[in-house]
Length: 119
Length: 119
DNA sequence: TTCAATACTTACCTTTTGGTAAGTGAGGTA
DNA sequence: TACCTCACTTACCAAAAGGTAAGTATTGAA
Image 1 (tube, rainbow over the protein chains, first blue to last red):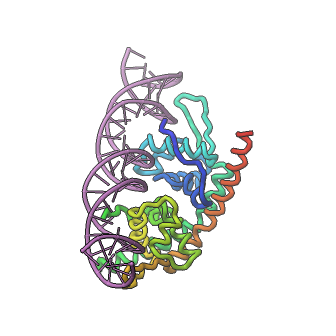
Image 2 (image 1 turned 120 degrees about the vertical axis):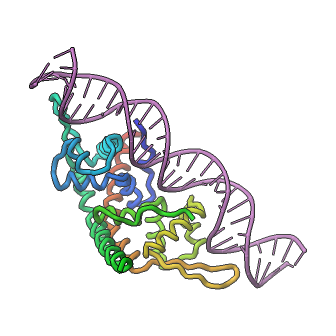
Image 3 (image 1 turned 180 degrees about the vertical axis):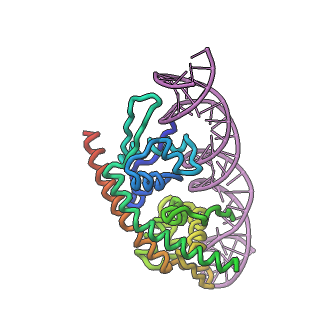
């Protein structure tokens, strides 16, 4: 298993938050679990178009280790594994909301610029 | 100059915000400019302990291109270049505040855990 | 007996990110 | 003339992040 480096010491809050949220798919995993409550591994894989199984599992493991998500294995065949947000995960999602809104306004700005550029 | 890839298309707001804020030193640059208003290149370099000149300049250029910061050159010898936040940069900093607070709570949690672990 | 479904796991590779260290240019000072 | 400050710039390298594709384990169904 590829090990992780950071997890502190952090020089400020942003630093500490970025450490758990940086990763190509992590904020999308957060979003997906927040809107659906519980998702199976395969459901997440299909929802995050383009993610590789390796990265998905790696991100899920790190987020579990960081206390953001909960992993529940059902001993069935074929296996069933459910992922859901913990309280920390939900609060992180809350904290990300203003950033998401800022990004949404940026998207709209860029959309306008692109439309003007191609006119 | 190393070129950048992303700048859209983005699949959601978080994605769009992360694209401009991801980079080892960017949130620190944001913070530094927000608290001091205006900083020279050398002042930033000294404030961000450990940053290399190459990365500092690269981040500053990208942030300028993204409309987050303003760069003002004074034609003096030795040269003087002032960096400051634009309105977009300030609003991004605002949007990052809840995330920073979440990270601060995480730091405090980790601090407690580390203290317990070493006890 | 072979296959299907699910959730991984592994080896290997490419791309991206960031660091190091040396160099540039312009003009003021010793 | 040589040297200084400052803001870069460049070539080169190392590490981290992420992708591809094949393999594993389990067991019920065909």
